[in-house]
Image (cartoon, rainbow, N blue to C red; front, side):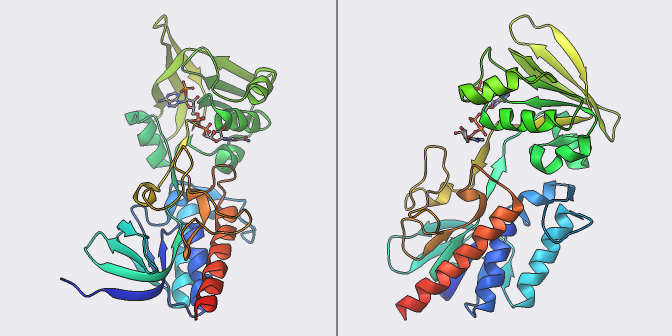
Length: 315
Ligand code: NDP
């Protein structure tokens, strides 16, 4: 049996929330240990250009930004480790966590920054152009700008899809929205706004068959009507998927209050507190509204400050 490791601060997840928490915790001498998780760098590593993170006047690629954040956290001696935490026990005063390589860690404070994963359709062609950075995206606010003056297609019928379709409609000449049923899931007001927008065309009972491209870039979408089986080809340069996100919070469900879709609930609005003392949350694991790198970084800072104050009050 390996020895139990005692630490002051464990940070789970390596997106902007986790690294910002690490920078603050390390500078406060909490000697944080950060586990990178299954997707080191988080969702931004699947984004191309980031132009809306303050301080990068000329933009930066997602992967580059995450390397800089990691370097910055390590500059203050954050112990960044590959691997992930696969089990926790938050029932006692000390928070027990186990890593995938079998290490048992007892942490006074835990900052959860495990993020969320955008859901995709899972089509081979969708994944191909997503990996290539060739025109598939799950974030219109992040990537819509690159399709200014172009035609785009968006899949989904919830509030996110409506919000994103509306956002795209201001940048793109035409947005085609593929709705798999004959009605929206979104709130009436959001659906109505989309219906009233002139350059959004809604195709009901329509599902995606294939994302078309030239091998590098998306050129269109082949879709079919699931009532008539009739196929259509829609030219576009951008294919947006807005069918929901899944917060990466499964391992916490026995200890933390989650909402019905799995997001961690804040114990007190305006803080990073969860219902367990000494366990804090930052970033998309608790945020289904904003989901931006800069808001994740902001809440990472809050979580580290809250953790520092919690430790100070204990000693
Ligand atoms: P939702 O789960 O609400 O909606 C997902 C949508 O994607 C549904 O319309 C669903 O279709 C569709 N979908 C799922 N899988 C597929 C598939 N394989 N192919 C085609 N379509 C698919 O997710 P959202 O991200 O939209 O919203 C999550 C939560 O966040 C909601 O509670 C929402 O209200 C909230 N939110 C609020 C906002 C606001 O108030 N400003 C903005 C954004 C989100 P179907 O309907 O057929 O199941």
